[in-house]
Length: 162
Image 1: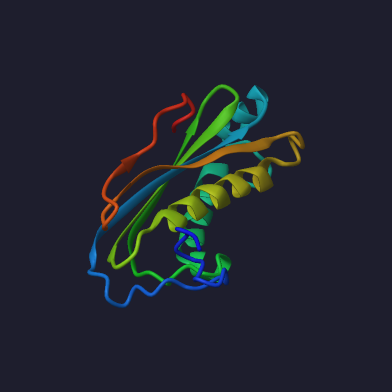
Image 2 (image 1 turned 90 degrees about the vertical axis):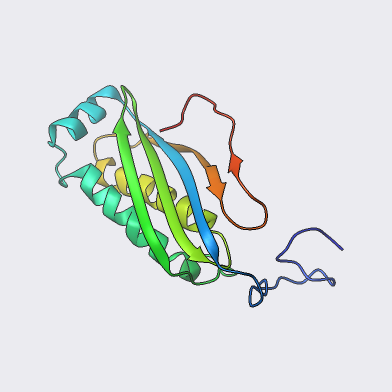
């Protein structure tokens, strides 16, 4: 019926059978952006946001979220993650977020990297919402992936890459 792997021949959702897939080293990088006012960025940089260290909280939130991905996304397989890293960079009017997930296993870690990047952005929003209710979370995307049958993928840049 379709080339989508999570849809069976009748159109029903299904979890992909990865039982016979070989374990390979897999890596995925995802990004997101939180856009806000320059004064909010200055407060984050100065460590003067009332709720505390925005970057530290967002980093830990992203890592924790990657570990919980199969609980959030119904058809994701639980993975034994080897590493998750979340980096946040302050620009003039935005926080650039880059999340990397790695594992050795039979399926990829794209959803874990994307979940880490999105939840890190949500944590930035939560920490700073009292200062700027008009913040926006944008540009959630897969930047790169490697390992497995489909090989290496690298997204073409748009200028917002962390």
